[in-house]
Image (tube, rainbow, N blue to C red; front, side, top):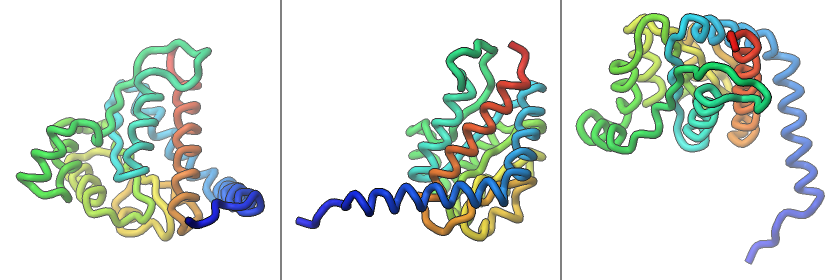
Length: 196
């Protein structure tokens, strides 16, 4: 059986996460802020925020949607914000995958739920996930703003987004750790602007 990580390896993993977040702070703070403003304006007009991602990014989509619908900070009582993770309806995902292919499972929901004024947060660590790309394409067709939460080079999605934050790493774990931090910052920005 392989040996578990040593304490030094644990420290190295934490240090790598810290270094990625320092790069995020230095290179992405303006982009994080700009995307947060877009989201805050959508919330101010009571527009729907949709989120999608695969795997860990699906979990991030659900996490951020929950913070918006319920609340981010326990000491802030405010109205519910219309947000939905397109990753949670197993009947829609399996029917859509069966009938239209897995690459269209999110695009179909964007078509169903999105309206001008809505925002799609497209989460992909590579920026190349086919079903996230198709969701962004559908959003653009429908006049829906697309915010990217990406990694690496930003991939194909970078050019399909109206605005994006590209976590400065090619390591999936470091990108995902950055993504949830960005999502939390957006939630705080939104809550700081919303009428209680």
